[in-house]
Every structure is written in C-alpha cells, then in structure tokens.
Image (cartoon, rainbow, N blue to C red; front, side, top):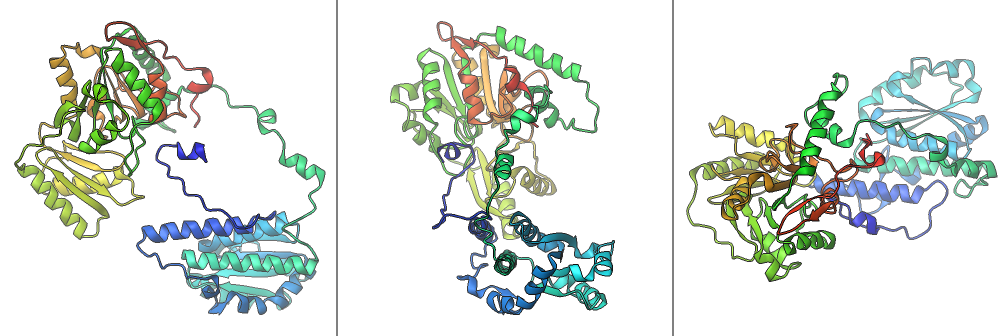
Length: 529
C-alpha cells in the first residue's frame, strides 16, 4: 500500500474481506461492485441507491432466493445437456460476461454469449439443429422485454428457457444480477458434484499461469522519445496525421543543447501538481522535494513558487522549512497577484475589481442552474477561483464558464484551468509577475531563470511560466517547440518528474546551477503508449 499512497492524485482507502476468497473470487468481485456502486451513488447525490441488505434486491419482483427456487428445473436440464446460450440486453453485459467466465473457468458448462438484438444472426441454428443439447438464459431489462417475449414465443418447445428480468440497469440491478448468476453457478456446480471455489488445478495449468511473459514476448522496439510524444500529443498530431519527425527531433535536440549549456541563478516552480500532488487536500511538499529545495536555497539559488492559492501555501511550507529558509523563498500567490517572501504575512489590499464581481455573479448564476460548481471564491483584487465537484474534468468545464463570460461581453483571456479549479484573473495579474520581480529586484538575467510547471498548454494555468525561454513541464508541455518541454521520462509526471529534474541540478558556484545531465536512457525515453 505504501507505493499506492505515494502516487499523485491518488487517495488510498482499504477494504478487506473477512474471509479468504476462493478460485472464482466471487467475494472480492461483489465487494468491488458494491464499493464502486456506493462511490458513484455518493457522487450522484443518492447515497441510498443500494438497499441496506442483499435480501432487498429483486429479480422479476421476487427476492433472489424466490427466483432461484423457480430456476431449479432449468438448471437440472442445463446440466444434463452440458451447454447454455446466454442472451442479454447490452446494458446487462457485465452480468453475462461474469457468468460465462465462471462456467468456463470452473469447467462446468459450455457457454455462449449473444446480444439479444443480434440473436437472429445465426445463433438460432443451434436450437434448430441441436435442440436437445442447449438451453437459453435471457438477461433482460424493460427496454428489451418486448423483444425477448416475442423471440421466446418462436423458439422450439424442446429448448428450455429461463429469464432474469431486472427492473433496469442501475447499480442496484446489476448487483442483483451478479448475485443471481453466481447463485446459478452454485446450483450448476452442486448438480455436477463440483466445488468451483476449490478446483483440482493440473500442473500444466499452473505452468501456464506462471509463464514469464517478458521472457517469451519481446518488448516493443524503440519508438518516439517521450519528450517528442508529449509535444505531438499537445498539438494534436496523432494518427492518422503524418508527422515529420525530423522537425520535432531537431527542435528537441536544440532545446536540450541550449539547456545543458545554460547557467541558472533562479528557478520558479508551480506548486500544486509540481511540488505537491494536485489533490483536493492540502499537504506540504514531500521530504525528497524539501531536501532538494533546501539544497538549492543553501547554494544561494533564488527559489520562487507561483500558485493560484493564498496563505495556505505559507502555512504548509512553514511545516517543513525553517524560518531562515522561508525568508529566502519568494512566493507569487493568487497567480502572481501578491509577491513576497514565504515568511512575510500575506497582506491583501482592500477594494473590489468590477470585472471580478461580474465573474462571481456569472459563476453563481451557473451554479443555480445546476452546473456542478462546488465553491466560488473571489479574492479581490486578484482572482475568482471556481472549483467543481469531484470527478469532473476541469478542462471541459472551462468551456462552460468561458462561454458564459463571452455571452456577457467579458474577456476570457485571463481565464485559466488547473487540475482542481478554473481561475479568472484580474487584468494585469499573472504568474510572470514573480519572474519579473526576480529579474528586477535580484538583477538576474532573464535567461538565467528556469521555470517549471504542470499545465503548460493554454488554457492551462502554467502557460505563462512555460512560455519563459527556459522552462520545463512535469506533465503537459507548452505547444511551442522552443521551450516548455517535458524532458522527464514518460512514466514520470507531476512531483516524480519534478524530482527527476531536481536530481539533475548541479550547484556550480555563487548561486549558480546547471544541469549535470539531461539525456534519458533508452528505456526511459521510449514512449510507453
């Protein structure tokens, strides 16, 4: 579990079975199904979507036990014949798929699956030519009930049928169907005198299971480097478009060469998704990140952090850095609206910005109409931050807000998207204010400032950071080919990619650092996808 809890954007919740599962893993499957159903029910605002106990689940208006009692004759006939066709509504396909896998993996019956809508495309010939060798189970819900009744009336009388009529295809119905079909498997196994949970697995079966796949399946050949692939992805150059790889490779090589030759005196980081995992909960940077930041600060490097958040960052940083270190870290909070040392109290000027007031009213109107907005936070005179409910992709919701601003005659040029919110900035507010402050106040050459962020393609909220001449992405790169590259390996993103870069920084002298190496190994650079 330690590896899971360290993943960015992942929260670990552990649910354990009370008893060890058997060969067919019925208990763990039901546990997973119930947990997923409960999670989606919470997101849907319907926590009572599942009944308190399984006894309240229904098949055809009956309890599962009552429905099974009426199925005994069908199961007896099926085990005699040795084969079954399962025809199903496409909405109930998960039930059919699991039923087939249990019958097959338990070596209980020969089972065929057929979409109810496609049954007439040849599946009926089994009943015509081998009516004594087959039975039919139908998994149906109201939308296809009429079709099933019409089909069943045309079947040869010698072919036994059983229907599993479910009220719909909600999680409640699907779980009822899963339990129903698992109970049917149990009846089949009892008729055959088998225990599908503890089969006699032959040695060759164990040998098949433990085949060393990397030994017998050669790895894919070297492909496009992950750095180039990330650029292709962000500009939409995907199959079937034809790509002139030479241009992209030359752009990458030129950028890497210039990066390796450059000395740097300052570095400006994004915070969420770069120094910390981009999650809804707040947490300070991890110990490895803290160690690397302190190494740079102690070497005299000017370190800045730009974020859409406010003093919550100061509180988190104070948990992991001494006051002496905090005094030497510069912050650009509220997307660069406020700039000052991490140790300084946050002093937000009074007054309102009319543009932000308009944006707030528009966001509130959207929320009242049912747009799944969780929170609207206006911080005058800097920004309005709009956070959406869990599970919603922020990049899609950006267009909803942007279109509403456009209809009201307001500009969308200062509207940006992060992984957790949409921020609308007041005119003149930008993360580049932190870069400008370092250049002007610390008299640092602009080309000796390195920037790093995770959302480098517009409307990502790090677009201004990653349009700086020397800039690195830890996730989505800039669309420009002369900057904002993601040079970290493809399998590393967010904080992991940040650490990959930081570990390659070498302090030279007098507050100067440079890359000691930037080339990836062949295994790192090959694009996994």
